[in-house]
Length: 74
Length: 241
Length: 110
Image (cartoon, rainbow over all chains, first blue to last red; front, side):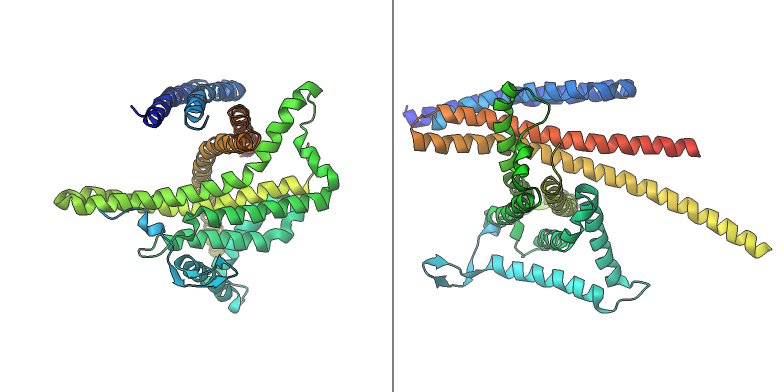
């Protein structure tokens, strides 16, 4: 196989990491909303935790993207 | 099926070249002139017969003016009121360009990143200059989050600087991506209508619904662009805390 | 006498209609704003990362340090994108909390 072709395939495979990030973000916001519906008064104080979880989840997904960029341009 | 990107093609109508630069009058330029004429026309009709009880056109003009004024004052304070004319111009141009682009056989000026990026960069440079005029070198303090220990500053200052300089890019990419994606989607679905024959009625219904959504997005994105410039203007006018 | 009564009735009805309309306007405005924020946040992150990586890539090209500055730029861009997201969320959060408090106050008055 050509090295160039293998590079592109590898980059594509690395991007699969974003599937997990998508599912994770959906789960975080979904659960937050479900919790907030049950106890709206407690929702206010948990918003920082929500954003922290969101940032961490997004970061793991982006590491996959970083690997893809490294394969392509590194 | 026709290429869905064909609608974004720029075709020179009157070829012109000055000093090695291609400054042809293109279809994009034609539609920009159309949009500007429309904007000027609406405002001209609005203020032609001023009366205490506003007529239709005056009502429209007043509504537009008041919306922008309210947005600007609520996000950048009372001293930002002198920027209402320029913000109204920006808003009207983007709004009409987005809406005119939805008319079949027309061209969406804002679906080209060069147009939106140019607008965002002009606005951004103006804001930086205004910031330095108003606050002097103190304007740079906005990169220094207050109440943070010095070791953290080494990490935070670059982040603040990068987050400041990606503003014009996010601003323009948002507008351009929304307009372009919407039009490509409509075109692709329109292709399905032809190729599916009788069953084409299903994507046709989809297109009708999506066109309604596109109108909403056209207005929303024009408003978001204006609001964000107002918010950035606030940083320039008032010292950061 | 009856004229005055009629007028009062009309005034009350007008007032009620106006209030209903205000509530409806407020609802549509909030929905539109939420949608706007949603669009904003997604693009904010993506563009932050893309711009950070692109700047790093260009610097790598210039300084010949491939791929290190790109990695740093990528992380920096991500942090900057997040910073912008947080900033906008914070601002709208404050606005909404204020509006909620105002609503509550109004409810008590009536």
